[in-house]
Image (cartoon, rainbow, N blue to C red; front, side, top):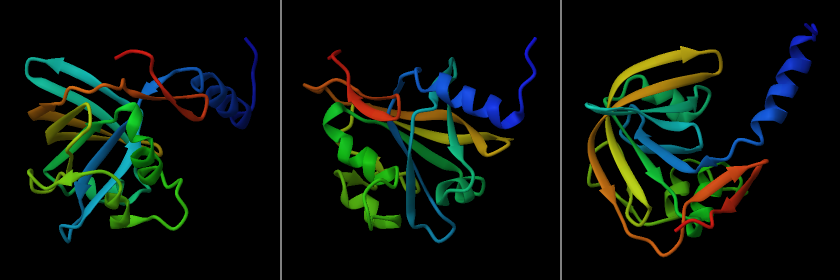
Length: 171
């Protein structure tokens, strides 16, 4: 067994994970004052079918990460390849776009109080926050799915791999 310093193992881990493609989602919720907040996430997966539940991993040092533990609801919006600007805005990649200004990218609806939904994404999952698992820099949000919105699209999903957004050839 090779013993490496923690920093080297972390960099090796990051390097290896860059090869794992992930679907791009925007996870949304509200802060204590009711203002919408959200972030781009690729660490989202189904947990159970019965009852429908999913897991979303969010950095706890983000506005959403700080607010979500006091929230009762959040949404996961699955982006299409055409929604790269939305992903970039919520990932903080557009200069000068922060906070609520991120919601100027995309067609957002307040159908579910506390969890903005992106009207034209591939799918939206409204979740009741069931449990939060605190793990180092991130929170694992376990959500019981209370509503699902699916939209037919001409474009496939937006993916993230090797530190860049890419369009899936699947439709």
